[in-house]
Image (cartoon, chains in turn red, yellow):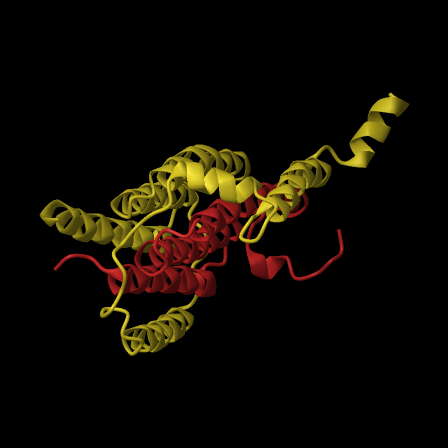
Length: 103
Length: 178
């Protein structure tokens, strides 16, 4: 069967649910960041699928994934800086150990 | 046509397997490698959808930038050769799986009830010249403001990252006292 819009949408829904499952079960900060990346990619894939199959190649659907990728890169930089600062203070990346705002 | 179909199913299965590896591996370094595999698979799906430019951006920025950054951070903070991180209790894993499954069922039901499969226009994709014009156009349908805002974000994020992860102030003070 030739892949159509609904194939790509269901695929990205599955990817999103994998990311959600990981976010709910992981307790390591870096592993949670990787799951966020899965979720972001599922969203970007949806944009591209709609742009190709439903909107006749409207460039908006191709611009938004670029913005998503840029935001994900900025987010990864800041989150990993926080990870390094947290590790320096606590020697531990378990999110449950980092439940205070004291330095 | 047939090539497109075969490629979709193979790449889709490969990407979902890699995504499962990302959420289930017990070693941070392996998680990061699994994420690289997922991102390359998604770049392949972009290629199937005729989005060559996005596919290139995905590989260059995501796999070449974000994953490498994650790998560096992992190597800095963990002893990857032996340390496995804590896992959640089994009850929490089951609960999370049920939540994810229910969400998937709801989303799939909503998608399939929309009838996207019928009466759709012929597939077409924006090529790189259309994307570039849209990004820099100030008229209707133009994205020059998001483009400028994202460039500000991309300047602010590394500055913030250096501020947060840079050397603590007390280290500098100690060195001056010496």
